[in-house]
Length: 228
Image (cartoon, rainbow, N blue to C red; front, side, top):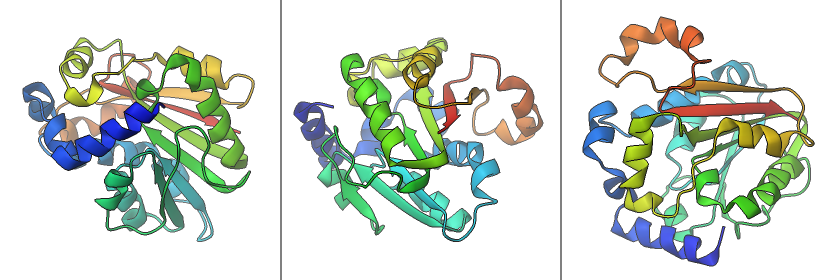
């Protein structure tokens, strides 16, 4: 991620990041931004609900820590965040947050049992993505789990929302196959789950369909998960 991108996210923080994300289509799908974070937490539930108290998790590109707050309140363990924007981190009241330069995470090798990185890769230039996946691999413990959440380019509404979002001016969406190719020589078992098929108001009525729909590449976003 370039220095311009880091400065850009500092600027977004000053202007109100959540306000800049607002879009009539996006707002009609999930009126409360919490909905999108809860969906991500649900996709990590199978792992985190059974973790011991000494489990360590890092959220890369954590912003102001919205997802981290959910994880901290829902699961036991130790949760950390890191982001390129000092201003975004300053907006958070969470501890255990750190800034990184977009190239090297400020942690030793094999530090965390699990990692999450939500809607970050599409802000990273394709030439820099191999370095980022290597950094994620480096700080993850053996047998650790990585969860990558990204916008789904197959979904036309997602593409439309991203194309007119001031936060995503530099966005280069990536398909799950690219993540699979990037991780092939570093990680072993991988899986892609698609989600965000139904708007927030009716989503609870269709929770039973999640396990059936997750293989259909039409959800608004996808979760690429793999093991070290």
